[in-house]
Length: 145
Image 1 (cartoon, rainbow, N blue to C red):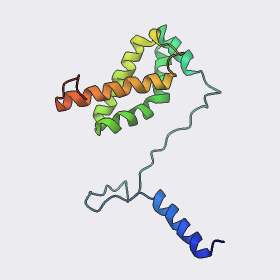
Image 2 (image 1 turned 120 degrees about the vertical axis):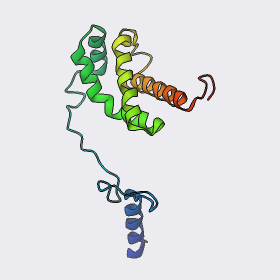
Image 3 (image 1 turned 135 degrees about the vertical axis):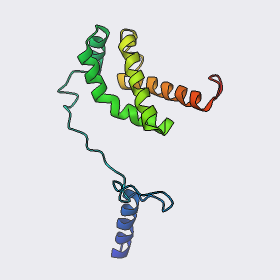
């Protein structure tokens, strides 16, 4: 049987896991206040209520700029986080995401939904672009890891 002391330990453990504190050596931003900053994201329609990503890509392949804008609105936040995780530079991450959607605009007709899910394809394009930019920045030859 668990005693109340054990429950407090578990509760404290949960608190320490969910609270993220910056090391004292790092400067504290007034926005962080010792916790991870959460960025509010406006509520979007669920995927059941909206047009599928595959339909949007088909429309992008036909030259529909609004479909590209909708696809970008759905996925750019996640793709930016992926690129930032590789590059550790917010401006470079945004540039990689923009170049990803530029590439999507011209390569949407070649997309095969049987090979990749749409977000998987977008993630792969972003990952490759971010790794390429990181190699260019550090001067590592493209053939080496």
